Length: 127
Image (cartoon, rainbow, N blue to C red; front, side, top):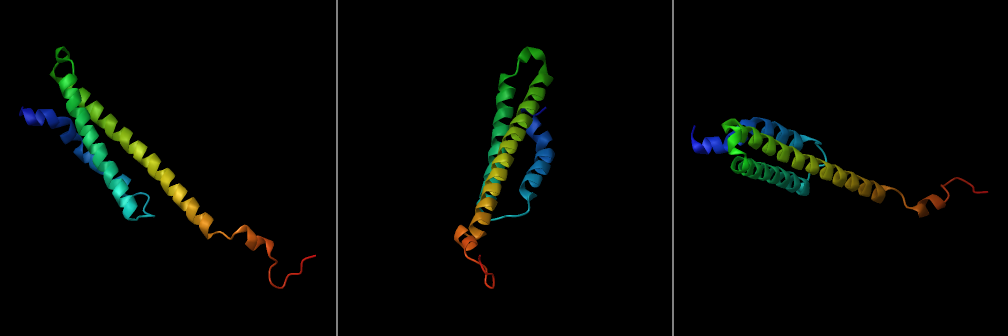
């Protein structure tokens, strides 16, 4: 097998699955979508892919050579997949909290102030 293909086999095999997960991360939730969210989503996907690639290479070089040739691929696949999923999970949780805080801040700024509640409504007589 070509040494470059062997070194990157785990990433090559996971490209379709990583692509599906990346599309789901990008597409949901559909709103709100702004420039800051696009930058955050892009950075999350790029960092997750780079760290997965780094983990794959690290595990290929650090796998026990006495365990057999397949062990390098098994370890590389497991490490790359685990790192990608771990970082994407962190990115989803951070994005979820950020969007909830943003929605709560928007709701707070749109709600009437306490002074508005203390005034009587027109046509109502206070006793």
